[in-house]
Image 1: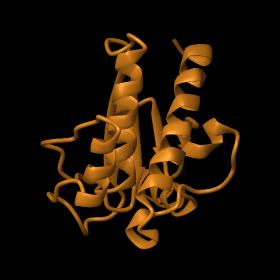
Image 2: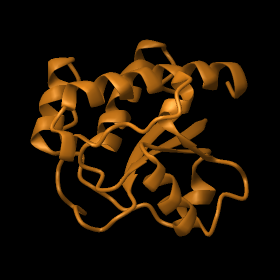
Image 3: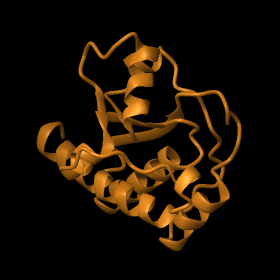
Length: 153
């Protein structure tokens, strides 16, 4: 089983959106038994809080639920438990490297690299544009599934 951890700053917008978008894509592809998906935060600011209501609403527009999800923090010990860590932006990548004391096994990626793009997923906490964040995350997740099928599964 491949284990994927999506990571953002607070684990209330982008990374839980990615977690639940990817879970739907993986389920639709019939690969739920092959890929385990979770999400976490690099900060402690939102720990224990549920998915931010506008993010939850955007997921709901697309028929995706996220009930029961609360923010958790990425831990150094997670490095050995997961195969891939997918950050939403450059700051997430930097913070993951700090938490893990670097990426000795090459497990850290930025989500939109799987969509053939080098840019960050814009943070809807600041932009208020949850629809664009959803579209970017979905594009990245579809590319990630293609990568997993070609390279790992």
